[in-house]
Length: 379
Image 1 (tube, helix red, strand yellow):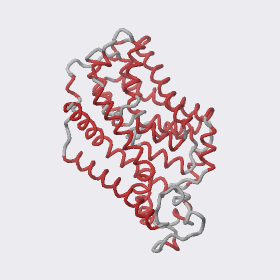
Image 2 (cartoon, helix red, strand yellow):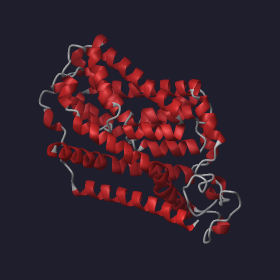
Image 3 (spheres, rainbow, N blue to C red):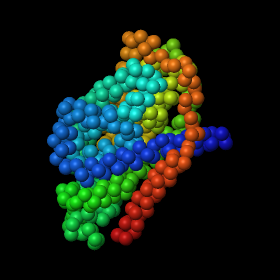
Image 4 (tube, rainbow, N blue to C red):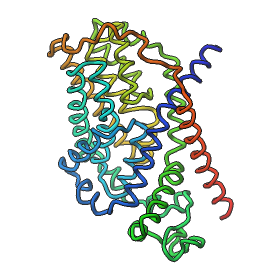
């Protein structure tokens, strides 16, 4: 039992150290998008419920180095600026599976064919997810549009913040409506550079933490439990049963948190133990694209139907490309270097920089919730 709790704690710390810098980057990007990018750009390019906007969102997301948690605040920010649910789903699927850093790392550890197949699979899976959401989850989007969002009426949603309107910049929020805040996105965007940057920082590290932080923490605790409780060797036990092998990988990879780059050494070590290349691709796709944290946040922010279509598209895409690799492509294309042993993944390599990121993340999370509690006590 002591060993289990030690493993759980180590997994939690390791995942938080991996997640924190990318999550903070995602929050920061969301704030910059809200403060500096005109709202009509999102409405023009990503708002239509069509395959063109879905393709654009996937193409934008593939090179970005954001993990499954870092992409969440960015996608929520895109949705609040007018992007359709289908485009946001496409962005959510494509972005965490790849990135310029993970593509380079895939090439170095797994060879050129994995490095080529991985972004192609991410692109087609993202397009499938976006199409499914546009086609079958319109109720979620219509329900979202019918409700006031935190950026429009943050006081109604419980996210208290001082308005950035010019007339109330140094005063208490002007009670121009029933929510107690009269400023809008257009008013915020009229300020100078430093005013916009200040608004972006507040939105990134206070409002977004208040809206998403609780669910990220819940998902992270669940993911750490699964990571500590399920041995890696179990995934390689059924090498000759390829489809069953992939289903087992999916069952473990979907709720488990693992970033695109971190999934590479895990996949390599499992392939050294007997995991098929197709099942390894399933891990590379499903592990980064879905986690307990992302499933919870997507369900809360985008709706339950969107959540299930998002998961279904990743399962279908991962299984399809995994089967193509195992049954239709030469296996020698996907052989890993035998010199890369099981020690490529270090679970205890926590340095001072990792500790600093964890402290910053937890401090911002605590500040966001203290700010919310203080605002509620004043009302």
